Image 1: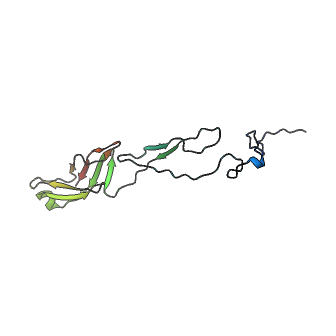
Image 2: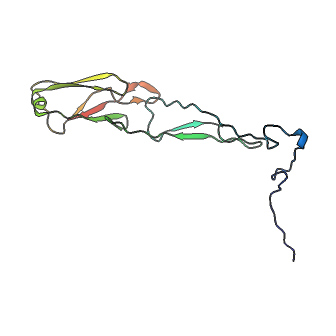
Image 3: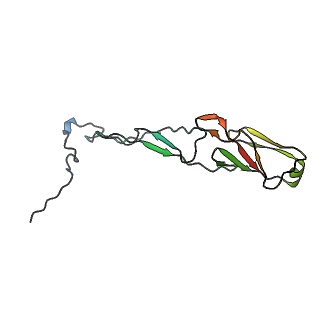
Length: 156
């Protein structure tokens, strides 16, 4: 009985080339690659969205005779304690009392870029429950155009 099997050569690991003991590199020991930890700095631009991809071209594992792949990072948005994002709009809930609803009010809130935004309601204009107010131009900055902003909506 004769059995024939095919397997990878243990001497050259299927590469068809064996490097002499005296000619081998001291770092890689003839394997032609070394393991190295590389730190990549990721810059997240203003206005980037949940699920947006950041690609580092040619930074994946490298080997002789093989084109290196890409590293793709997928952004995950953290929830904020004040704002909720809806596209480029920012929503926040602000509760007011009966006196403020009937007689007008003013309040300030801290925006994401640490600016103080003042929202004023004139006296004599009654604010109804569930009312939505818009502060134009204070939403999320647009990606690749951070000076253009959308509007947050303040809900009472």
